[in-house]
Picture: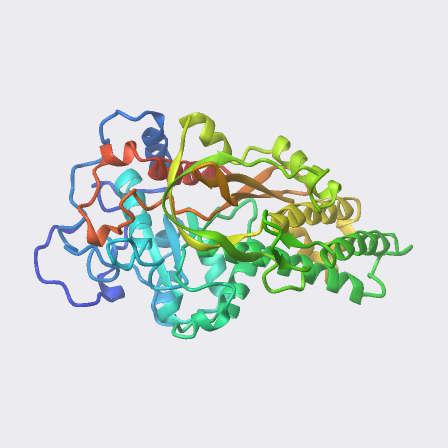
Length: 464
């Protein structure tokens, strides 16, 4: 770590990048040290900081991306990406932060909040874990075929929030990255989870992009299955017949399932509606909200098919989603909310049901599909669970506040997870980014529900 006090250039280049991971520890950092330090942070709320008491603003007074250590690693161009690819030790021991927009919104103090700064600060302060920033809004969409394998080779991928609305492509017009670019990237990222890949955490806008991608991928699966007349080596046609039967069920529900608010307002008629996955929230939620356990709809009074509801209840019983169990660990979780759109409960219940049907149909025919044009279906999630809701006083406002995306390996049966959340675990109660406030101490972070949840998601994901 450099202690130079010389004036830094306005924007750093790859010549200024640290080539050894870690900033606070003299010995650097790696997967094992990061994992241990995350575990230590979560062990209690009172232990002392195990890391050296080194300021992270000495060489970067404003704590801004690209203006000084430890925030020097910003991938602004193909040249930056090429340099990163030549130094795998950098991306393998870091968090990749994806910015779809330059900030996540304006807080009550009138400040534009660049929440990615908080992600980098939390990771470094808690576990001396470096962060790499991919500002797609300013760099444009770099080739996902190159970017996704790199970022998923690291410790975690965080897809940040943003001020535009995924319900309106024109709100992205001022960025160099379009909504369609982000959809393509998110599709690729959702299909990348493997036994050797990093978990992903999709926050706010990222949470909404993931929801839209679930529906896009399921519709793509249905369309491609229906387009085939036969599969090579499927001698009796049994594999394709089984898949077509399941896809017919999925299509039937998808084309008839409506999205409605509790007051009866119709948001979407079916899965072809642009607001099927994400719609307007009843109220804009800004500020602290308590996370509540998700409660399934009543099949007797809901228009959602009973099989869809039951499939989610089975998923919730079968898997542990970290956020839901954190509500039990911490007794009460209060997290910062910052949004006016929401992921529709019906869409996620439908996605979970459809994913499970596809997975079960593939199991006995996977050796045939593995060598076919449909092999990508085996990269789909196995299930997606709604983990919690938020309420304004006694009224639930956001039913789907977080999800756990479960992937099941066909051979080992092992489960891997990624997570999405409408709320911002990286923001403290004041809704300010680190560049606008006094950097929080280790002790402050120990007592912050959001920081603890953020650390727990990283810690749990790294174990898979």
